[in-house]
Length: 342
Ligand SMILES: [Zn+2]
Image (cartoon, rainbow, N blue to C red; front, side):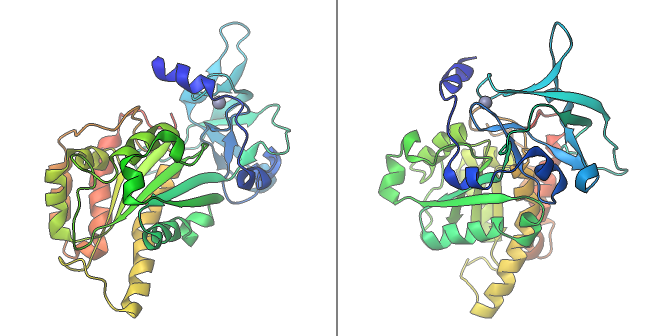
């Protein structure tokens, strides 16, 4: 595969300082509450998405079964880095993880219990790495606040960097202008306001950013703030790329109270920010964990977006429940797809 070759050049990358300084040992990562990321010893990207069963020193790692590779001769098992093809950590499969009853689809749990061998290195585990990009500092800060919601920070240790690009910079952006990997999540933050420029497709503001970010981060998501509910279907009908992103779980629309998209007064705003966090945090965790379908390039429109819009139309209060309704419809189609973490 061509992509594998270009990726293998970027081996032995040094971890950015903020991530390196916050890295911890395997035993600390396993026994302390927030989850961290097992980095590839060569390229520093996530070697394998891991969760845990049990607590404290008794906790055991859980991994996707597809990631435990067995050597052709000798039968030794390991995680091999899918990104650089070189980094490898030996593991021992301990058996199947418990599957809670009534588990929802979309890859909620990881099936195999494993113990990691030879991860005595002090900094084997680093924080999740996320980056928020946008045109306006206020909008980037608003998306960063979503990632710093308590619901996320109590369960994931997360390092968030912020970048703003001028419109003229976005127009001629190259991949080198983007923050360096590793990145589990890159958020493009955009506020829908009075003068509505195309976001993607012809003359789209974020065409370059989306295209380049897709190669850099495990998951790229476009967060749209203050979307007037009535405008959402128009937005999708005009911009096929948005339809593809939506159905691949890479579009997070946060709806405004009315169809003008005008901000409400300050007090209501604080309340609505809290509400915004509640609407977004579950999905952002899903993206951080790689529980969205894998796409090597920008996802094509799978023609399901009209059903997603119909789900929104069935909601009495779009501003309060719209995001959850839309995403619940989106996740129904994840079943059977290979996920980013698989
Ligand atoms: Zn690697």
